Structures are given as C-alpha cells and as structure tokens.
Image (tube, rainbow, N blue to C red; front, side, top):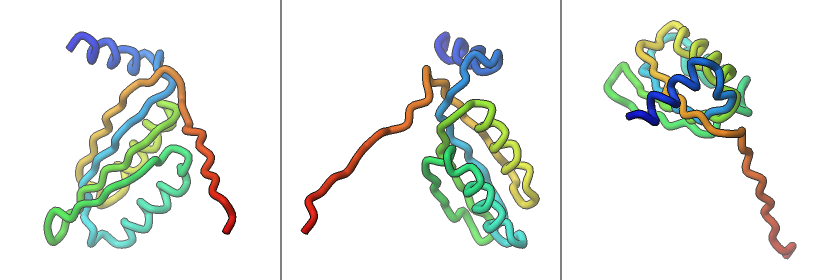
Length: 113
C-alpha cells in the first residue's frame, strides 16, 4: 500500500515522466462510426499503443482495453481524448510509472532459403 501511494504521488507530481498503462473503456458499438474513430485515434498514437483487446459484453456494449507505453503526459492526453468520444460510456486509466522508457530492441534474423 505504501509503494502504491508513493507511485501515485510520483505520477501526480510529474516525477514519473514514463509509464506503462492500461486504458479500459466501455462503449456502444452501435454509435455511428465510433469504432472507426477509436481506431483512427489509436493509429495517430501508434508509438504509444502496444496492444488492445476487445470483448463483446452484450448486444450494445463492448469493453476494450488498450495497453500503452510512453511519456506519462502523452498517455494521459490520449486517454482523455478517447474517453471523451461520443458513445464511450465509462473509462479508467491505470498508470504504472517506470524508470525510463524502454523500447525493446530485437532483431530477428533467419537464413535465406
């Protein structure tokens, strides 16, 4: 509990410039062009979006979780913009501060056949 409180204070005081995060939101999939608008927003910040998962809750509602990594201010701004879209009913952002932004550097090599 103490660690969580310290991390929350770091986030609030902007002492945590980098984070990983999950943004979960419920939206009405019948809302006109909402799915396309959400996809377009995610494409505009492709450097932040790591992955997303969509679950159909019922006839009208979907739950989507987007996993993010990057500058804390950029992640917050994206979350605010997305959850403000018409048709998005509920949204929650969970930020976890990290020491430095890390981008996996992996090279895949395979022999040419």
